[in-house]
Image (cartoon, rainbow, N blue to C red):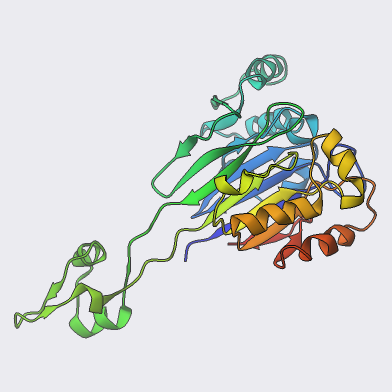
Length: 304
């Protein structure tokens, strides 16, 4: 099975602490690397994680609060110093485009690569990126400013050819794709070997939902139904539920409720308030609702 994982670079909230960096993640899927949010300190965390800067194909920004985008201009500048030539694609709300252009005109003259900006509408569900192996769609969220999450979904793959059948019938490599696409095999003696005997089912497509800053949304689960891995902000515990509602954030219990309703396989809690010295209190609250929960933490990699 091809790699599909999420590497946490930062999982703190707006107020800097010595425990957590601002929001940023690397999503690796089938050899392609995508960044989700780019808060301050992202480059330092990339160095610590030994992430190849030039392998980042695109950056997805959830919203224009500083703890989710202040690191972007620094990353763009560094990529220029590293001699990048491949385009970098930025997906973000349209309000970022003129800000980013002004910063680049001032700080990043003479880049030898293109920065291509793609305007994202946080209010709608739409596919904003697609290639031969995955799609990335927006997930409208409910925050103090326009904000969206992102849903990464693998495209279905072809069935697997059984290695023992290849060897037994001496099936040439040039014919194996035909079998993956449903063809039978005819031996030199004219015997027809049914495709179902030659193959095993394809791996089920996997998915990852990144739900950035948001107030609890009772219908959010409908947009991420049956997701394999869900990252949902859990800025507060339930004893601060009123504060969460005031600032359009969620509690750990609310994040777990979304995971349960969505029939998610695993939940990651993140975007922790600086008030918590130990986030286990958030974990303990969430597992009472949804058992398969983990706390985000810098350098942790979650395999899907």
